[in-house]
Image (tube, rainbow, N blue to C red; front, side, top):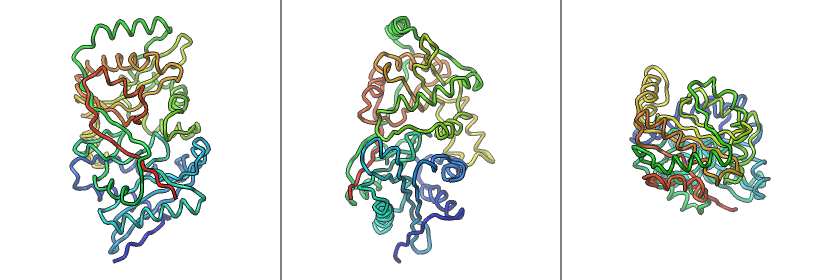
Length: 373
């Protein structure tokens, strides 16, 4: 039977779009289910401010009266202005291993982009760098962190088959934390702090972080401005993302470095790994999902590094090492042995260099593709 494409227009369509993800990976032993509530909030056009700054459409693929795939197309004027190219983005593409289905989904989003005057399309690439990016092409035998994503291995062959070429790769690392930092790390840290008038800030409650939230949000735009896929996020969009993640933070794993004027020089956000707990929860906090998550927050030997931001003029001054020293002290006290990085763009040499002083492996690779029309 032929594949039919349906534009997502109703709440029932949104439900099918979201629920397909859970059905599609139900038997995959490595996929980690995100909370369904979060997925629904992402596509709530009335309450997610990102929809005010982009053009977005979503589609479903059906075969034999069954949903067999989905895709979302995005056009972000602010990003197009930054890069000087008329490129749409495709995101949330999921489909069974069927050429007819894949062809129909890719053709639909490409035709939409052409109708909007675009010269090409890139992806998978989400609404921002705080959203999902790229498709997993290496490391399918590892659980993803909750800040990352997972796809079936066969996706790569369909991107390649349909004329998509590599645009950019994201690398992920697994780090083994040492039992003790070398004495040199402390000496260098003291020297950097003294030279630039920097000091560390530690937190024991979310309330203590609140006075720094606005600075962290603004620093995000500043710190990530030069990286692929980024564009200046408006305050309401930044607030949306930070409100989404803030309640789940462990304040002890939030590290901030201040300069002599008490301005944030850099921040690092990590948390005990929730991947195994989220897999058990299977997308729902109730009836027992929240119990698995609470246990993981308290008893864990793995940690996920979520986000690091450093003022551009200080990015080669050792601020990342100061943040990592502070994070190591907290993690070591809690029995953390392993760290999962989030995806780092392959040309972000400053971030990648941070792991050179630790025992680490680069175990995952994700790819963003491009296709010009």
